[in-house]
Length: 384
Image (cartoon, rainbow, N blue to C red; front, top):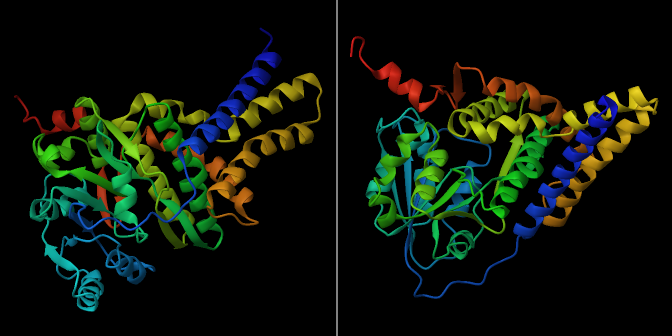
């Protein structure tokens, strides 16, 4: 096969796979719509919320958590240190909504190198009910939050999750964060579920507590550095499925910086690399950069206009992404396509960073992300 033809064919194949992932995701995703109020007989739910620090939307996310349309639920807020500034926000919200059972637990159970999981342990063990939701503090819960999670549970389900959908970005880097979260990461996660490859996402996780407790409890999620990776493997090992909610939940972003985006994406890349290396390896082919480069190589060799080729590839890559966001009611703006282009320029560097060792930052916590085998080797005493 001639190199020119091979490059053109590979470019087309990548663009078609990009389009296929968007179509698959669109089949699983539904535009946000209000679910009817539940019957009084629905089971009670415990919602465990690990928190650290005050964020721009903390007051709003707390108010939403206390305003859910579910007959009986408890909120268990978990913080590692009593001097955390978020304590004041939480106690104020608890005082404003005395009708909702809520507790604030303080302590740091070091069961893993994952600070969020360590923070959740005390909440899980204190939960009163058989249905437990682990919910990040920056999730903007809709009033039917519990209904949507429960609606995704099936007889063969082991876990229900939701990936975050970015909203309300401020500034250009907030737009880039939206481009990462929405039409890239959420899209591929839902496409994976459509293919029977459901992966857990730690933003919102609905567990049947007796089921998980019978298989090691929350401490079993310390088997991997990422609790969602450990959850995925545990559920698959039990012959059950990870399901995603039909309409993923919103995460308001506010202002972001390039450094914040790089730190977060590099951390997630490294986590995917050490937990699911076979799925991570092909990520170098995601985004518009690989098909664009291949198409330009083929066009240059064939004497075809390079600007026209570039425009054709970018339209084929980004128009379906924008259509997905528009159809599902996600954030779109005049800067969206430029943000997607910047995102795709960052993807190869982020992928390369995923293969490198070294410490990464998680909200002020320095984490050394490595494979389980390496960790066990380093923990083995010398001479053992």
